[in-house]
Length: 122
Image (cartoon, rainbow, N blue to C red; front, side):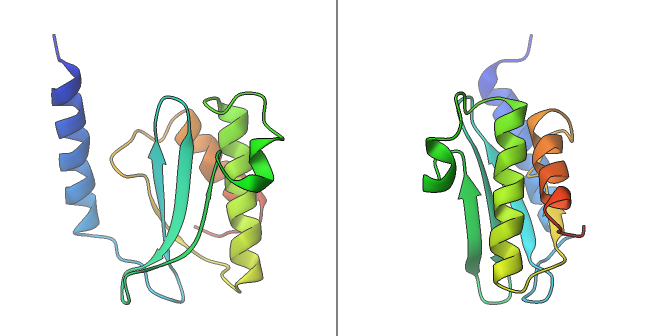
């Protein structure tokens, strides 16, 4: 049986392996996803300068009062749509998707679909 520490260590190893291959720049920043049991977070990062260009989460002011539950797939979709809206305001249309070692399933998939729905291209 695999314990929680081992699962976390394996996810972190997958994330490090993927980060060797993908890199975000100002024209095409990296969209990073982090999920906890209660919330989901997304950021657009320019790896050349090391700056966060914009971010969104279920704790954002725009979504906090709108969402009834924050740990479900519909909340993740709303986070993706909000992030795409913020990115469009900054002139960002295309991104590199970094799922941070998580499976492309459930909340991570819904966040990506919400970002695509909002107008971001992967």
